[in-house]
Amino acid sequence: MNFIAGDPILFSIPESFESKRLLIRAPLWGDGEKVNEAIKESIEELRPWMPWAQNIPTVEQSEAEIRRSRLKFLERTDLRLLLFSKESGQFVGSSGLHRINWSARAFEIGYWVRSSMAGQGYITEAVRAITYFAAGGLQANRVEIRCDSRNKRSAGVAERLSFKLEGILRCHTLGADGELRDTMVFAKARGSEF
Ligand SMILES: CC(C)(COP(=O)(O)OP(=O)(O)OC[C@H]1O[C@@H](n2cnc3c(N)ncnc32)[C@H](O)[C@@H]1OP(=O)(O)O)[C@@H](O)C(=O)NCCC(=O)NCCS
Image (tube, rainbow, N blue to C red; front, side, top):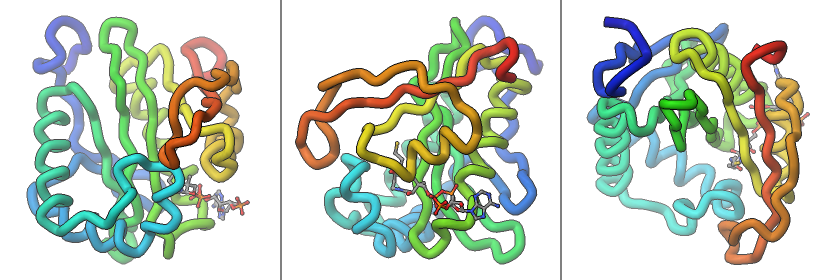
């Protein structure tokens, strides 16, 4: 079965695919330690933008989070994807397709990169490949990127890939820092955009 209709639990979704430099795959039991090491290294860069990164988690907490994300992947309720360097095997960062609306086939891409691997285009490469994966294999009609309007590096990823800025939701929600924030909404939609 490889159709994308009916009950999402029946969908055949590949657990991994590749881009030029990256292996992009579903989380596996045991990934928590590598992810924890990357969070520790990157906590200062993550904290302003990621509500879950206010404190460094323990290895056990990271492993539990990985296991929960694997279960969600299998349920098709949230498709987290981990990024690994094909050359070194090193964990590069985390991304995935979230807030899934299977009926409309609409997805939101999230991402973060470990600090030692920033500024090398890995996230742009991953988001390009994940968008392609969503548009093809998952028959996406819409792929969205949302970010705090103060988060220039995140908006840079969307802009580099020609996601269209559809609007700015003013005073939309609280940021990771607890301050009221505006949210930029970028998207690609089926048609000329993919
Ligand atoms: C948002 C975030 C992932 C962006 O990381 P990044 O390293 O800027 O993104 P990329 O990996 O795509 O790299 C792009 C940078 O590499 C450079 N680059 C080098 N080689 C490149 C290549 N082959 N392709 C594209 N860009 C390349 C680009 O010029 C750009 O640098 P610049 O912004 O100084 O011009 C990162 O800042 C982060 O993890 N922040 C914390 C978490 C977060 O905010 N997540 C998003 C929440 S909405």
